[in-house]
Structure formats: C-alpha cells, structure tokens
Length: 228
DNA sequence: GCGACAG
DNA sequence: ATCTTGTCGC
Image (cartoon, rainbow, N blue to C red):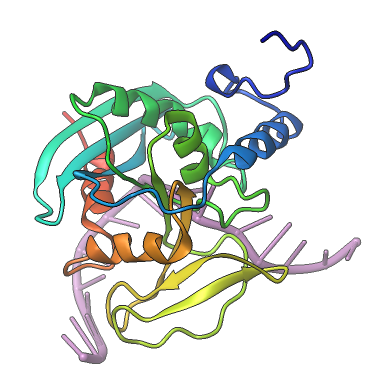
C-alpha cells in the first residue's frame, strides 16, 4: 500500500540525523515495540556491546551467543564501523546500532533473546537502544544499563535478586535490579517482546558471579580488546 | 536560568 | 566510552 505521508520507514531510516529527526524516528519505533511476554525458551541469549578505538573514531561491535541455561559461549562475532555520530544522551542508538547490526548479521544463527548495554523502555521517548534494536530486527531485546538515564526509585535491598520499580512521571519504565550482593544495581527495562518482570528475571538468570550478565560481559570484553 | 544526562 | 595501579572489603 502506497502512502506518501508515511513517516515510519524503519527498516531504511538514516543513521546520521539531527536531534529533531532522531526524535521523530524514536517516537515511531516506540509505537511499534511490544511490551508483552513472548519469550518462553529462547534457545540462546546474545550479548551485544560496542567499544571505541583509534581515539574514538572507530567503533567495534561484538555479539556473543550464549547457550541457556548452561551459559556457554556458542559463537562470537565482531564488526568494525567508522563512528559517524557523537554521544548525545538520549540518542545513543544512532551512534552504536550501525556496528551492532553488522555484528549480528555475521552470526550463523538467529538470536532467541538479545541483551544490550543501555536502556530500553526507560528512555525519554521510551525508545532506548534495546527498543530500537528490537523493533528493527524483530528479536526480543532487553536493556541493561549500568547507570540511570532517568526515573526515580526507592533504595534497593543489598541482597542479590532484590528489585525496585523505576518510575518516570508516575509511569513504570523499568526495574532496578541488584544482580550481585552489595554492588551497585543494574537498570533493566524491556526493549521488545518482553514485560518488566520477565526482563529482570532473564537478566538475573545470566548473572553468575559478576554484576554484569555474562553475555554482555563477554561482548564488552571482545568489543574493547586491544588488537595487534 | 540551573542541573541531569545510557555509552 | 576512554585514560590507568594499587587497594579496601566481603
């Protein structure tokens, strides 16, 4: 169906954009995100992250596939891409997704569930990097932030597994999760095809002895490693 | 106008 | 994100 006023050609939207263009794209993507639980047995859980090299001019994205619940590495790929956008709070996906999408394309198998560094729904326009990646690829995604972008929450108990809802303007936007006892908590929010509780459950199931879930931890190491 | 501000 | 060694605490 032809519609010349269509404002949401997601699949081919540009990556180098002005803030105004980014907001329009994010608003469109957010409307397409599904916040209902659609993940039962993921088959595998993929961690993705980006590291910067050559004084910040080159991005290296890594995608590491883990079995679940065994959490063993099944496959890992890297993709290098020149950095085209600066880091701007709220527009992280435009800077990191191009490289991440290439790394994901290198995988020989599809993803059952993807864990991303950063927020998902817990975003000003409810379109963090996890949401953006989920809607573009169709894969279930979860945003795992090491720090807060926005929202308020009560103090989280110090024991592993403790949680508190993350709230913005009276609306729930995520979960603050203590993934390891006595260590600063993670900010979890659904990206695509998952709800709040299950998103936190999946992340916790991937946190063995470290604060950061294994898939993201592995992707972070691979994306940031010094090569020579 | 003054802070806050994923990676 | 990135530049970087030792050190305090469970």
